[in-house]
Image (cartoon, rainbow over all chains, first blue to last red; front, top):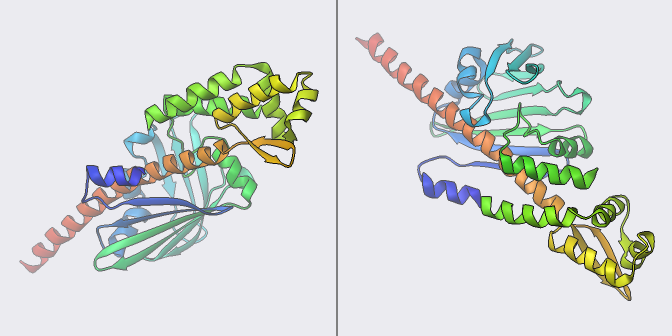
Length: 172
Length: 121
């Protein structure tokens, strides 16, 4: 329903889709107007990555980002937070130039997902398919219940916070 | 969307403003139950319990199904709605993020074109 509203507002914009593909997997797709080589570069060079990973609507500010984008290399993102900064970290488990990246999300312990993104070039554009595979159905359910919008930080608005309050009151 | 959420919130808040109804939700969180079971458990008449379950049902917190002479109550479709709302927020985050990525890619493309021209000159 929101996808249609968005395309009315901006018919030229490439749509982003999200779905729960299975009990333990979320999948996001989006086409980017540019060749895979360039999209991959924007994803893997830290100084470029920092320019887009934290959109303003997230309401968070990125304090630092360090990454060794090689298979086995680690990364660490730190956001300003109250009372303490929040760190998100893990390891790259696959780095295949211009086609595939995979990394772990270890800040949540064993329950964190493995994120895989593939870059498929089609006529000068790149289709991104991003998967977040959780170790179990329970781990994904927990991530949803905690209100974290996955992928490094939530976006909450007043109504959503109220909504969560209702859910937690019911659940407690 | 906001209006939709507000209406649902109003219904949810009034549904859970009552201690018995909160108890019923807690109970159904552990196991499904018939209205008779719930009436017994909360020391209430069948009619009284039916009213409470009706309020929870309207808020989408509980669903009931009649099999034979027994009406069974379980936690409602709200769970699914919560999940859909969560996925929509998640999609919006990625959408905003990819919009920014698109800008960075656009800059890199332009830079390459300029560099390419310089090399040819």
